[in-house]
Image (cartoon, rainbow, N blue to C red; front, side):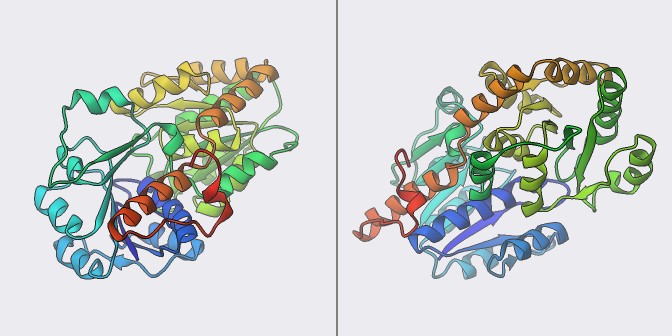
Length: 360
């Protein structure tokens, strides 16, 4: 069994939960069942139920997490950690004792205590500038770049099968699981402004029922004559992306899901850290980045320009899929299985054909 400790909740979003579900799906191909450990966030728990995940280890916010984690990890062959905050030395040593340890990089120094560090949103030089050295006798391996973005297999399949989209064309708006910056409403106004200027288009919003913006959306959408809001659910997002001609997104996991589906995206950032992730994607022609200081007017102009150029939209979709092909979770699972094989002396043989594809 592999234990996957992830952040969850309105404060941190659902990116770690999404990555955990993707890795669980891929690890199953190696006969490695995965169990998530997380705070009892209602939306995250609903996601796990919809995905058919194993019952999770619940970590109450008012109790230390480590004792429960160590009890759950007693029979685990590996632990995956995907937190917004850095691991402490005590946590890294305790969770990695006698087990493989994979940490999703968040800028902390104790990632060097892991066997594998997953940094899908980073570049090699960012790691090197931190001057990290392996700890605890481990030979740390780094999995860096968009090729390792863990996504559920359905997003890759949606990109493979993406065909004709509805008419009028759909612009999908999603600002993540919590939208802490309150971007959803101004983004909708920008889309409405573009619609007034250039064409008939449909607007679809995906949002979390528990986010503050949810209560305001029905009235705003009626005023803008937009489609009803869709609740944020893991299996529904791929359907929404497959139908979208264009997406307006905040920087996060959904950007990579859109890229895997071949959907061109206009991306806005909330913090300086987002810019570091957005710049290389924009430089590759995979997204249009509006940065941090965006406005409804700038968004409307970007939408107009993309709808005026079908060729550019198609090129962006291809560029996105070239960077994020949807096989990141399988690549990570293959590397983790190889680490386990080195420990046990047993070959890591995938039972799922996707895991044996070239380049994994």
